[in-house]
Length: 120
Image 1 (cartoon, rainbow, N blue to C red):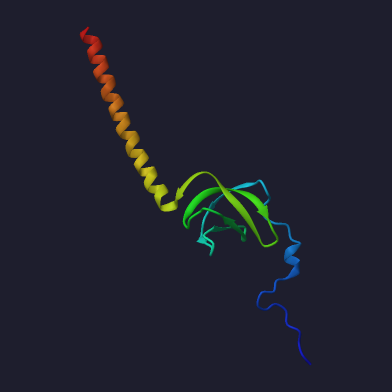
Image 2 (cartoon, rainbow, N blue to C red):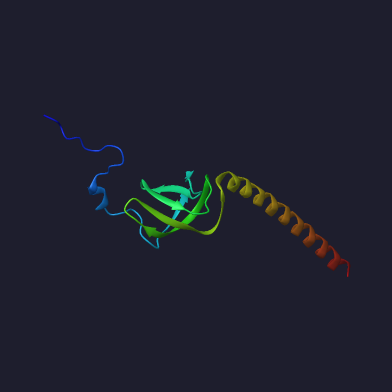
């Protein structure tokens, strides 16, 4: 008479809980934060498995170390320095400009030193 429906609001297949998780405690991953949760934690996915990263901002690319793994999500922490993705490109360009300026200054200093040695 009535057909039993599977699924619905808030229901998950119990087989999902037995599947191996794509992340393990202690492992590190390079990720890009795709969203920010209600509590302000950064959110990323590793092989469609949700990872919350406290202190991370949307668009940030960082290295994350997994601290805790549950059935439906993991919690990680940022390791090392990181910057938002948009700033990373700008910082790279600025670093190249600074390196070029320093190389020019070093060349000028070497030329001045060799010129003063010749005079003596």
